[in-house]
Image (tube, rainbow over all chains, first blue to last red; front, side, top):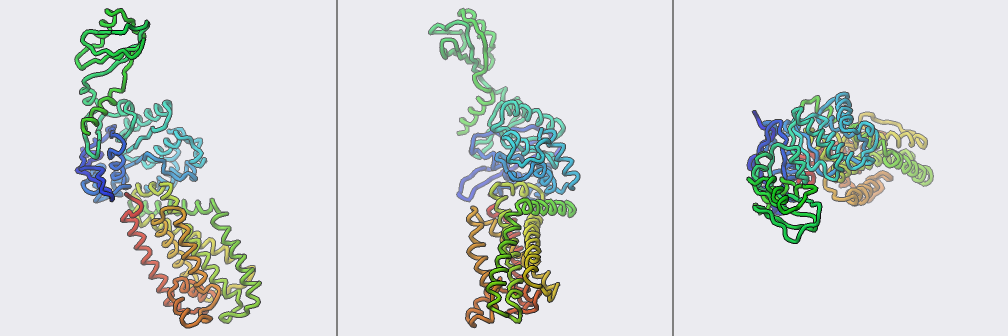
Length: 305
Length: 257
């Protein structure tokens, strides 16, 4: 089966000599929910810009559903929907017009364009705002408008560049549900995000890019399996003694009623509780210190640096 | 994209452009009507009455074709430069660039928007001029030809300005310091016969001279330059500007990184 996106030896050198991409290669399978992660300036947006023709590549090849962008860019673009990081619609245009016009640029007749615009505005909760100028929308609504606009021609591959940046938790969750739904319906999704729990919650496969190189390209499950340790935080019922020890575990006393305990791969959390019980410490609650993927991400990026 | 899909994309862009300038009609349509009315009153009725005849016509009749052409030039130019630069400025041009719409359709869409505004303003100004003078059309074909070529040429010029502009100052520099002086020196208010040989020769370098005189010939049947040569110049510049604009779009200059 042809890949939804295939990138080979993609290189980008900007006019000032800065090499943003150093010959990256990656593949995204059809139907995948794929995370493209990396620190600021790693090359994520450059990669997306090249795929959707806003940035010209210096070398390498890109194919969208088997269509090489060098041979048939319009054909490749038909399969592609892009939600960029920054708002890039005309703030004076009405919400409904933005979608209908975008559909028109893909050759959809006016009646079909209007039908699609209604469908996606309703699905993303913007139908009531269809006659409002887009500048009147809240930040979250503008984000949803960008997603609706990218979907109006029903692309097979949807690329979202930090779609939930600046969106409140409730809105973010509803956007996750929507993205899961369209992915289940067959749309391949590539997501860049700074919220690593978002990637963990939504994506099946991942590529981590740093300084223009792919430092990891695997499944999320595989990546998490490789975690060597996790740090748990325990809140205690009573004030803690100055020295707390649990045999076999590294323990750090944070304050009078909080402990941090590292659990290595192969160790059991039950043993931690047993040790705390033995020390006469009663636990009222427990949580991860950090998102697991975040920890892995930081390790990989630091190792690559 | 099939031709049918390309046509849909073109109509979408044209509709958007027309709706844009209609939405802000007090900025796009009204000023020309007011400015031209003032020209008619001051240069035509008040001063023109003292000047008498020029080129065998009342002064008012003589200046009207040039004033209509001035409105077409400034409006077709202004529409494209402001719309295209505005799209660049707020990044909404990316809606078009990421779509499969071919570059020549994008260019045609903006040009047609400029032509439409130029024609609409020309119609308004012509209607206003009817209150001041009569317009004997000498050749409908020449009038239509000059209007279409001129609005296309200056829409393209506006597009090129829009591509290179980095800020809003850049889109007003050309109309203020190039277009307006060339228009005033393009024989709108006088005949080249009134100039010395040297200045008449210098005027031949001004493209607006050909535009104004060709249109005046279509309306009144008089011209300071050969109408055939004028068409050749306007047509030639239009073809060059079209292919240069297309080259700018294809190369992504100032649009893609």
